[in-house]
Image 1: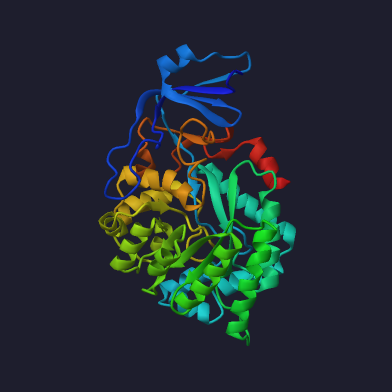
Image 2: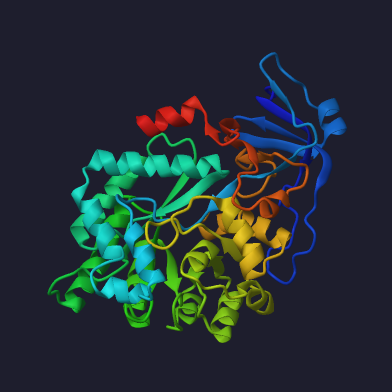
Length: 427
């Protein structure tokens, strides 16, 4: 057996691999007080007590040794809901909401998502690719080692297919794991369109998307005033038939039947859920649908429901995501999102860490490869600047991640990207 590439030792490791995953059942997470992590060929070879691991591991002349000096080591964050593929910003929209304009009101007046659609169409392809890679770099600096990216700023079949191709270019040689979601039904295109014809065209597109391996999943903004539950059912049924995983933006602003539909269709996840009914959450739990919480969006839109307690009562698996987008959550900081989850949504530290790692990985189909530190999993992990992983929630607005590793390679130190990451962004 070949020697390992890297051994990290004297770390306080919380592997997130031996734990209940449903809210209401999660207690204290297992932690190895003086642990070691062995990496070979980009994967975890072994996790255990430092003294035992070092005694039983044969090192090679090229094995790198890293003394963690008692610092906390956790899995890399998985961000299962982002809209990183776009051009432009929407700073003025923030002020409109401060002045009393609602999210849907701005959208229906031609702003919001429509503004980003125009900005993305006006940018050249190289600008969009570079901006998206730069945002991924920001995520990595804060500890994200796997993330999902949606389309949704094209809205027509032609533009959405173009965005999928750009996403493929963004993904090329990426040092982190990227999952792709087709969000053709993000908003209705402006202008005089036949809505039934538009839905049919988007549904017909799904077979080509799947056949050409342009996306891993399909999503719909299921919300009163955007796409109805019936619109969503039609599109996601077609997506599932094409072989794509299915997900929903559900019940963000008011109850729209999204949670119930996610359960009915067996969706991989339903996201937002601030206005979901208790019955809908219960149905999701029974169907095994993961609840992806987006506390950054709730914060930015001035909504602070104590969602965690409702999800405990339902017995849901909960995940956390940034929802990075230019209008309602312009952040890629998973530590900030985790802090908001604790302080505004009622998550407990163990729940939040699992939600940002193991459960988040499950929400985007990576449960068997990412989100936990166990033999055979990707060697995606973080060294924090403290011995207690709860610093993630304590030092809000700061970056407590000292080093970021993906596939056993360091990609960021003290918030600064390595040359490998910078070269990929610029390529």
